[in-house]
Image (cartoon, rainbow, N blue to C red; front, side, top):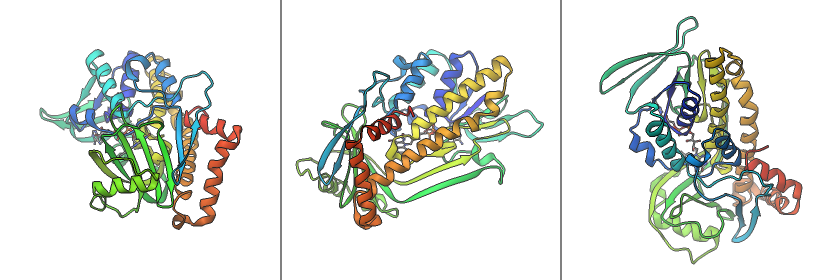
Length: 383
Ligand code: FAS
């Protein structure tokens, strides 16, 4: 088995397989230090926590406080949405960076998993009658790996999906028409994480460990980093949160992320299986990108273990059909969150009618226990 990509999807899959006694090789183009410092998602949803508990790895891999409240703020007026607790596993503010570091330690350092960093020229051979193989090069030369199965965990711009011939996949895309300026800052969340709107647009502050947080500011699609000097970021944060007491802090990392959702169907071709961002993108408003990657590899790991151990490929044959209903359900949640949290803000974006509809949706969360329970289930990934 060859897994392409040592991001959260590839490392989680390899760890599950190794734990099940199934050997695999992970090929990663970056070095270990680079993927250890990469900051991205910030929440492992309750479904993911349950998954790691079921695999007996939660204590080793997960850290960070429970994620159970959000301050939904409109023009500076906050309302705290509390996840309806039912005694089960709770979502965790476990950053993707922390999870990836813990996976590397468990897979490579503890279980001696085979992760090959700094590879290049990865090519996939996935012919109809031939044995699948992956070729690649590294400092020691050219290599060829014959294998039973190949899993593409190489993200949105990897080689796996690109290796599938034209006409096999259909890509379903939804563009929101705006972007986020994402800024990793040296300032912790004080109180509750914030998802806010104002007449100036969307703003969020989400924790990224005990001392850091990431702010997200809605911006124009064609904005670049040059349009967002640090001072403008902090001025906009204070204006959109209507909190003049917020002080500037060091900005460690900035990125302009266009908001879009994409699903590539089917998520497999012959002996190649796609998981995570290689197969779909979810707009980050719903905090589902990483969690859908974890869902994919949970299903795929069980199917691959059955195929290797029991010679039963049923799970693999049905992989795409099994995971797609869940992917679409959380694409819907990501679209609902994105539309609601952006339409409710700047009326020039989509007009006052959609602004009032979006604000009514938010009111429902606080006035209807049924709406609150569904929102809780979707936030926790348990619907
Ligand atoms: P990844 O992109 O994480 O990993 C793919 C790996 O494959 C990388 O290590 C790459 O180096 C490697 N690779 C690529 N091509 C290769 C090749 N040819 N050969 C070998 N290796 C190759 N999601 C959330 O849920 N919440 C958030 O708050 C959130 N914030 C985000 C903020 C930003 C700025 C970005 C970019 C994304 C954010 N996401 C968020 C989404 C993100 O977390 C993804 O869903 C998640 O990284 C998906 O994991 P993977 O599928 O493993 O892909």
